Structures are given as structure tokens and as C-alpha cells.
Image (cartoon, rainbow, N blue to C red; front, top):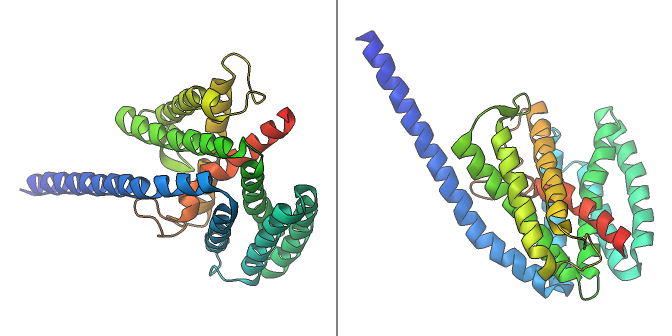
Length: 284
């Protein structure tokens, strides 16, 4: 009887786990169906709409970043970081991006001092500044490129999204050896390569339609660029997983059903955007 009871309990737990996984998947799909078209529309429109959209994202991301690092989300360093990020984007948009990069350097110095004062370590301030300010500034710069900016950002979004989508489904279907069990126990090598293939295929197929010919315009260049962004995006995902595990936090927030916080949704974009901006800058 005891063995039967244990077996029945194991079956019940497995069924409940499958139900939770299904509910999570449905929530992820529902969120994507709503958010993806809205985001693409805002990117396509650009201008003030896109700028204000980034401002809202900045405020939420800095709040979640502070929480991931053991704060309440409203510490002085978090408020200052949000202010610097908004200011940097505004300066970049109005006065040019070289001046904005100077403000990034000032923000880095201030955040290091605040981190030392609040937490006894300079590292969170330095990492937080680069992690938040640089990707958003890169995204704004990419969208501001005349004629090509709209297509570049859409290409980036599609590539990062399909990295996540293919990685998620291939990893769940094939499973297999873990990619980094001490950082993210659910991530597998099959999911990594699934995401890599997804990024390469979408990046390559969409390259000629959305990306300027100067950027990886050689044969199979779009596929290579997609693969590079895919690797970078998955690195960003692992980096955030490491941070959450280090601070014993499950998600950065509960803003998006099926995903958690905003950082949980855009962690790949945060690392992929500066890399793409670097390649575009080299090609310009």
C-alpha cells in the first residue's frame, strides 16, 4: 500500500507539473500574440512614439535591475540610473550620439560611486550602467539611421525572437544534456543549437528585405550575422539566469504572463543590440 501511495503521488506531481508547463506555454503564446505586433508597430512608426516607448521600458528595466541585485527597486542608484539613461537617450536624440557616449562615461562613474556607498562593491554600478544604458542607446541609434533604421530594428527583433522560440521548443522536445546546469538547469544544448538555427535562418532570410546591403552583404552574410546575434542573445539569457540564481530570485518581475519581468523578456535583446550596432557602425 505504501508503494502504491508513493507511485500515485508521483503520478499526481508529474501531471501537475505538465499542467503548469502547459499553462505557462499558453501564457507565453498569449503574451507574444499581444506584445509582438504592438512592438513592431511602434518600431515601424518610429519618431516620438518609439522614443517614449523606450523611456517607459527604461524606467521598468532599472526598477527590475535593482530588485535583481537585492534592492527594493527604488534605491537612489536605481533612480539615478534611470535618470541618466533617459537623459542619455534624450541627448543622443537631440544633440548627437558622441555627446551621449560622454554622458554614459559620466553615468558609469556616478553609478560606481553610488554602488560603493550603497552595497560596498563597485561592480553592480559598473555592470548596471553598461547593461542598461548602452543597449537602449544602441537601439535608439539604430532606429534613427535614415531610410534603413526601421528595417534594421525589425530584423533584430525577429532574429532575437526566433532564437528564443526555436530554442524553447527544440529544447523541450529533444531535451538532452544540460547547457549550464549550475546557472540554468532547464537549458539544454539541443535548445541552444535550436535557437542558433532559428536565428541563422530568420536572419538570413530577412537580411535582403530589411538589412542594408553594406552590413554583412556577402554571400551567406545574413545567416552568419543572424547566428552571431543568436549566440549573443542566448548569452544574455544565461547572464540574467546567473544573476537570478546568484541572488536567489526566480524572475525579475511579474509584468508579462508566462515570462516574468521585462528583463526576462528582453535579456537577449540587451546583449544582441550593442553587437548589431557595432557591426552596423563598422559598415557605415
